[in-house]
Length: 307
Image 1 (cartoon, rainbow, N blue to C red):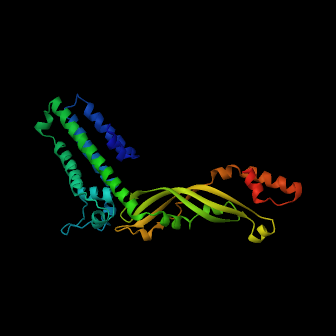
Image 2: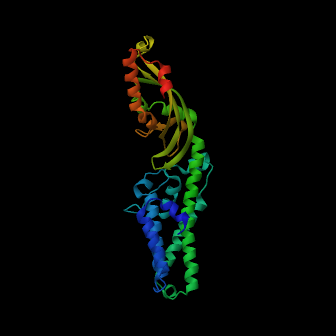
Image 3: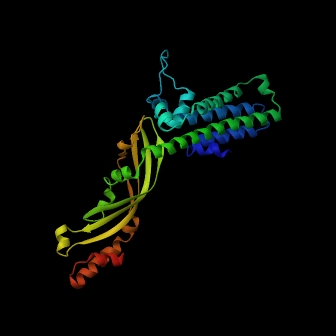
């Protein structure tokens, strides 16, 4: 099976099963309808994949979508699904002028690839009497059309994501947003102060009708504090500098993302404190032993040496 097709199908088991069934139909050389059945299944596969990537209700919320005035029930066309699959709710003006991308020809090629599938699904004397060489040629063209469609969607989406990353994401903005949402660190000590944020990577993970979603990963440096500030002054508290890896998600509204309006996605921050919690029992033991030995509070140096 073609990897370009499988990549866009992703984790959709139904679509993967449908693709596999289409190939099984093609291999059934005893059935004169094998090519027809194969082409029909491939067309349905494309339809289901585009519907998953571009649901009607999401497409219809996009600024670039226009209802067809004479329709009682508004329809989303295949071409519009292809547009949504590549740029989501970004306005055409933003994609062309701000990102410098123009997918008109690619979108038309996607539509034409689907239309070619339609030509193969009707049972005619010509299709029914196809020779083996013709079936091999046409099935190859069909697979290439679908794979080309899937590959084109991936390439267009990657191009949009890449340009968006450069246009709307800055390390300064990420640092500011991330620094406001670190509840997982707050659980480790009485207090903490955020000293630094290192952003290792960020990328546009997906684009919807409403927002651009950005996945961020990096490292934070914090000072953990046990006890109050007065406890520290009296030698009854402790401080420890520590770093943790984190991931989070930011968002920015479409159709024209503004780098000044990045927002933190609630509950998306994940701070990896696993190593810390793995040693929690050892910490308690050290604290109790030292306290009972001389009733002296641990200094920051004592804590650091045991880490």
